[in-house]
Amino acid sequence: MQSLCLKPPNISPPAETIASNQDLLTPVLLCIPARSLLRFKCVCKNWFALIFNPKFCDIHTSKNPYPNVSAFFFHTAIHDFYFISIPNNENQSGSLLKPPRIIEHPPRIKILQSCNGLLLCCSLREITNTSSTPRRYFVLNPTTNKCSAITNSPYATKSTSILGVALAFDPSKSLHYKVLCIRCIAGSVISFQIDIYSSETRNWTLRESTFLRPFHIDFSHGVYFNGAINWISRTSRVLHYNIDEESHGMVSRPPSYNVFRKREYRYFGESRGHLHLIEIYRPCVTQFDVMEMGRDC
View (cartoon, rainbow, N blue to C red):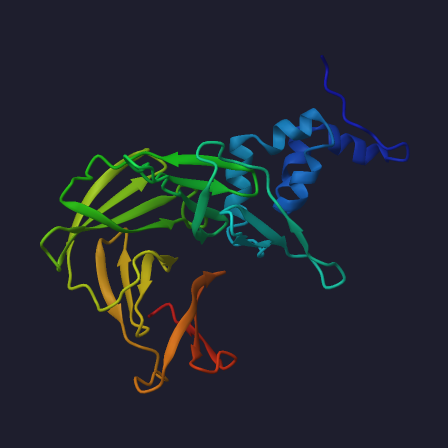
């Protein structure tokens, strides 16, 4: 069956030529934001095939490595997730939507991290009287509703336990992502096992690192910034691990930090190439500081 593009009655001949010629259409569509492209795929089968072509997707991602924030995702009490769509301009209003279910099994998932348009998720353990279901990890692309399951690391042993899992994805450098799993080794407080999964090879590699674990570091909440995974402690000290260089280091507390004031961080995350920390002051939760880390740490 031949695929025909839908043509408005008043379309001009030059526009019709571009719309029906893939060589002319491709450079035009590469300049279109991802949200609009998802609407344009409904024009006809030819446009649908072009927009979802893996090569086209890779080129579009490399040309738009840091798109504008499009939505905020959040959980509900039943462990489902919704998102609030952010409008393109001030005259529009955001909308509360529930995305299509991407993962059918297991149906209950938790968002662990957002990294440059991808979401790192894990399944929630199903505990029964006899056993519990092992936790599984996924990488979701909410724009395309595509999901990739992360295989279990072959380096997991009974003498190690997972402290945290983090996602590293920088489309300005590569269209492939990495997932870092940090494990503690039984009986040791300075030796850690680090497994790194690559979406390019679909394999795990084992890295070993030795460093003294800072007090109250939250390994369950890793943030990818400046080529490294960053974790924060309750005293606002930051531990970072550079994936490519296999090096680690500590970042000093913010200059304004005062150990005698009751503070706690409420947000630690990256946005458009910047790492931000938001702290509140107890008992007054309406007083807070927003701090930004330089790329030199």
